[in-house]
Length: 131
Image 1 (cartoon, rainbow, N blue to C red):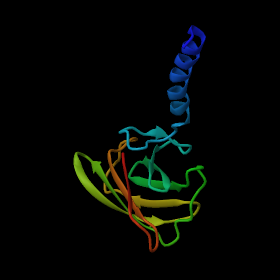
Image 2 (image 1 turned 90 degrees about the vertical axis):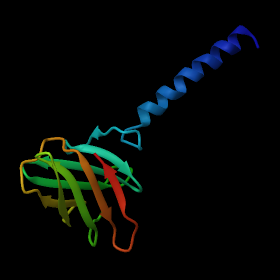
Image 3 (image 1 turned 30 degrees about the vertical axis):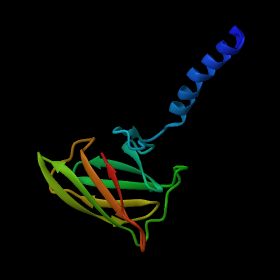
Image 4 (image 1 turned 135 degrees about the vertical axis):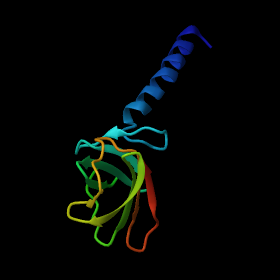
């Protein structure tokens, strides 16, 4: 190989991972989450992007496709298991409009709560998102 070919190969080797990272918008099982368009934590799970927004004791889950367009959650079931005041709390999520599922904790939630959200489409497979 000539020096020019080696230089081009090296440049491509460094450029490809940078391109992949620029396209990596949401958590794909790598243990981190990004901020979603509604200001909450966003992760990918199965066929969905799931954004968790907590305000006071209210929990809102935004369910989107991989193009970040809201998914109809009619018939979905959901459960958030979040840490509230150092204790695990199960919060039932009810389907709403525009890809939203909502529920209420019995106490104040931190802005970026830790826990798991599980959603199950009607007749579908349950997906979990770790926050």
